[in-house]
Picture 1 (cartoon, helix red, strand yellow):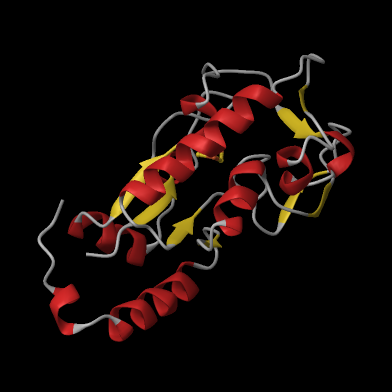
Picture 2 (cartoon, rainbow, N blue to C red):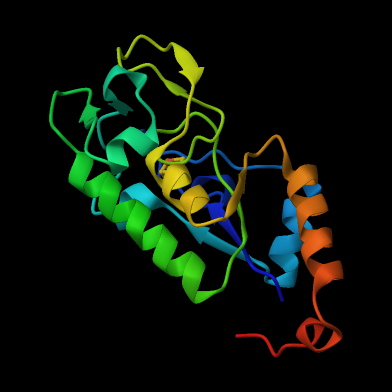
Length: 176
Ligand code: SF4
């Protein structure tokens, strides 16, 4: 079965910086969860950050790719440099994705880890700008397609393409 990596906060896990979740009510996600298709993951927690934690933004709104190359840092609202934890979380997400041969991820929009279309601009003034989070940038560099919680149907279309292009034998791979 094709597995899908999903932001743990979208699955109701209270892992966000403010101690809350952002539970998605999407019916397709619920169906996939029921099938055992979803692999919930929080890069920031797996990277070693606590819950709750100060909000963090990428310096200058530079985007995750700049963090991966060392051209930008991730700073917390208290001024601390949390770049190492964000990099560790992104690598951990990639390791999990590769262990399940994952080709699709559905990650929470706007996050400095999980954002795929927008991130905050680094000023902590609540201003979004186009850009990707650190985990998204790393996953996409390995060919994993990242969608957000508002584009689950598009993820479903990608899943159908993958399933239809699979060899018949691959469709009945044993789980696990
Ligand atoms: Fe959710 Fe991703 Fe933030 Fe974790 S890092 S709380 S999974 S948006």
